[in-house]
Length: 210
Ligand SMILES: C[S@@+](CC[C@H](N)C(=O)[O-])C[C@H]1O[C@@H](n2cnc3c(N)ncnc32)[C@H](O)[C@@H]1O
Image 1 (cartoon, protein in one colour):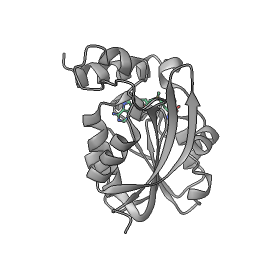
Image 2 (spheres, rainbow, N blue to C red; image 1 turned 90 degrees about the vertical axis):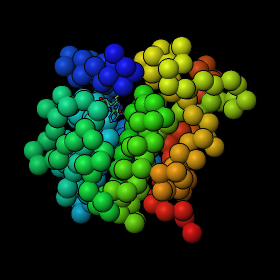
Image 3 (cartoon, helix red, strand yellow; image 1 turned 180 degrees about the vertical axis):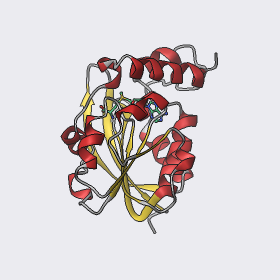
Image 4 (cartoon, rainbow, N blue to C red; image 1 turned 30 degrees about the horizontal axis):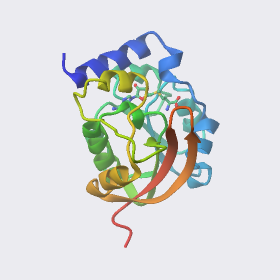
């Protein structure tokens, strides 16, 4: 079984069994505060929820905005969708220039660089010119420490399981640039001395910012 297949099976299993420790279950408010996105939508917004988890936040969002889409790697997550929401597992299905706001919390640290690069590219394409992609990722607290996030690295399955795909800020910013966007700001940074990481939330916009 290759790495991507292994990951998909794990998420399918988590969704099948409603595994709370894997799916997290952050609420609507938790997504907005951690991603500093409270002021970025109104009732006319079209919103993309990435990484459905237990789905309560997606259902809450759908009551507050005009149109909602959700993207998740597991097809099984579709059962958690509210009526009227559009669901896909493939970011290439997203319509261009459509979203006012895309939100991703506790998802990027589970993703390989390959998957994240595809997701960034497609989500940035799908943003309106005025839209924001608010995304959480992990940085090393000490950027000089050795990191090995190569796909196929010996400890990668362990890292992915433990949600420890860590990206230096310069690398994350490069990935955003390669995807056709730019990081407007790092909205929130929580350092964890114990894990030697920083939980960061970036606000991404379309284009190079000029
Ligand atoms: C740890 S849960 C977080 C859920 C929710 N955002 C929260 O904070 O409660 C990760 C979610 O992201 C989904 N996921 C994992 N890898 C993904 C990927 N490559 N693309 C889209 N969704 C992914 C999982 O199926 C799961 O629903």
